[in-house]
Length: 228
Image 1 (cartoon, helix red, strand yellow):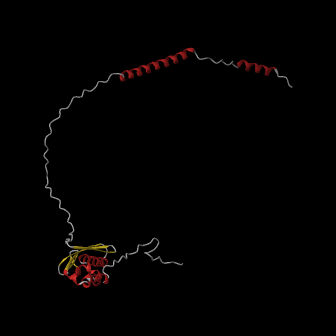
Image 2 (cartoon, rainbow, N blue to C red; image 1 turned 135 degrees about the vertical axis):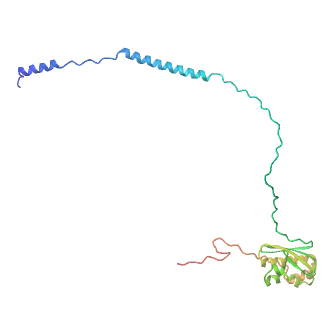
Image 3 (tube, helix red, strand yellow; image 1 turned 90 degrees about the horizontal axis):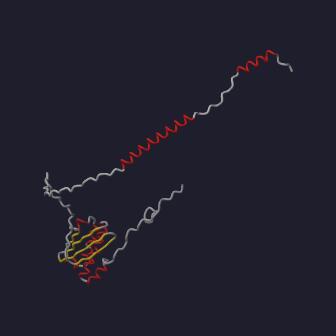
């Protein structure tokens, strides 16, 4: 290895002389630490003074309000002033009911129709719900069935029949009136039973429309079958 020359040694010695020594870390002065502690104490003292002032205000006794009794004035009679005339309310118009005539009564039923027949002494007049039977029943078949007891028993023409019938249709009402008429004649005179039984006027027709079943169009009618 080559030995360093004198020039290089001199240069290196100059560089070392120029380099300054590093300063040691200076510790904090104790005076600054004392100042921070004193500031914290001052702030704490201010806070305690403010809290004590608030507590003193809250602890002050509250003055109670004096309640004085109020003198009640005597009540005065109030006169109602009506600015308009009050008209009386009209009662609802009720449907005219058929007059019930005292006499022999017979009840007849057919399907959902119910007929009550009252017989009184007369000349064979047949009134149904306040109207003549020919005006009430509009078909010859219903009129014939209503007057059948008059043709079967000759004594029936000596009585007037006042009928109150409701429910069902006109054919069912006609059969109900026929049965009620025959039963009223039977209560009037029990000797008429053979003649009324022969004419079939005491037989109760208990047939009623059959109810619809689930999954069918009617009581027994099924839906149309679709093959394709």
